Figure 1: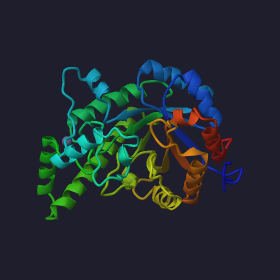
Figure 2: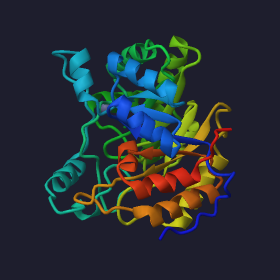
Figure 3: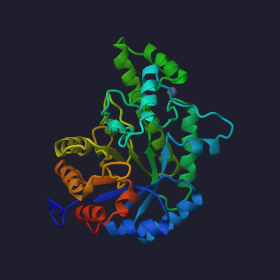
Figure 4: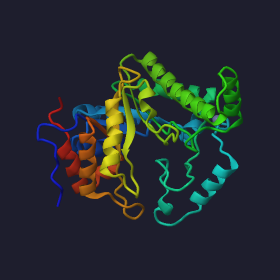
Length: 345
Ligand SMILES: [Zn+2]
């Protein structure tokens, strides 16, 4: 039995964005039927995007293509023979990486895969490019140009724009940049200084690429999901000069987030969305995996509770990852269908 939603029939969310992929002719009609109005794909191939935009147009679904600091295959394709400028960690963090990577138990001892950690020290097992590298910024600028050259693409979406140890990058390039930055600052405790540097440079990395997208095409929209978590300030997303800033409101894994935490986070995500930039709209990210062989499944009752809590926290926009995990299960599709306004305002 589904818990009755508190959302009135004519109310509910105005925007539902799915991160995912697949055959355009298959996923787009299914997504439209649930009430999605945007899809972000992890595939920036021009031919694929053209097909997806065409099908999306017929079903009222806008298409974004994503860029990711984890995109090693994209790097190798665009920069053959050049080693990717990777982020680095210290010995303690590398030891945590080894422990997590070697943990083959189901659920990996409640490892959170880049969300707020459960274990005393967690790091992201996926290698990431260093945001302090000029080469990485140029790599993304090229990708943005190519994506926005596809007619009808709504914009670009940033994913994995964060640090593997959830705090900073410790590669030689980043350490040198930090030391140069520190010399221009008033004296302050070193730990706080590194946090400030890491946040300011990550924010500027995102904002510079968002400006680049708008310089390529003035009507291009920029969307993101703030991930992996930045531990000194998990809800820093309103510093990003993007159109739609997704911040985690309900993460994927056990221990699942309770309604109170989801409401509190939503109040910040939506209540403070325009603190720094008037263009910015807050978006709540809800994690959905329907893969019982790998992870505990939230199920329709919990998802209903989560969407309810976002609504109570003042939310009007939701990103869900992954779109495909929503589409594959009838009960999950029904939960989302009930919460989204149609016709769209
Ligand atoms: Zn670095």
